[in-house]
Length: 63
Picture 1: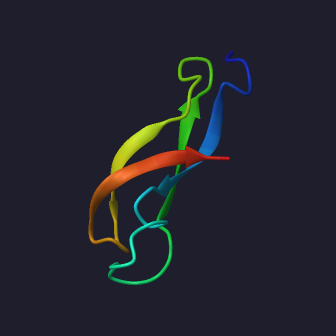
Picture 2: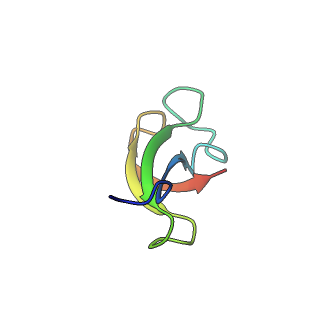
């Protein structure tokens, strides 16, 4: 049986929404996903679609 606690739920937040003033709508895009904290010890960065910016941007892991 697998040991509990290997996977944790993280939140990914758009990096351009904080500084971009010419957005389609106000707000910050956030996605939730899981990661294995044993294999991925650092902060995760993924390119995801941001509906506020209306384009694919880098989303970084937040606490």
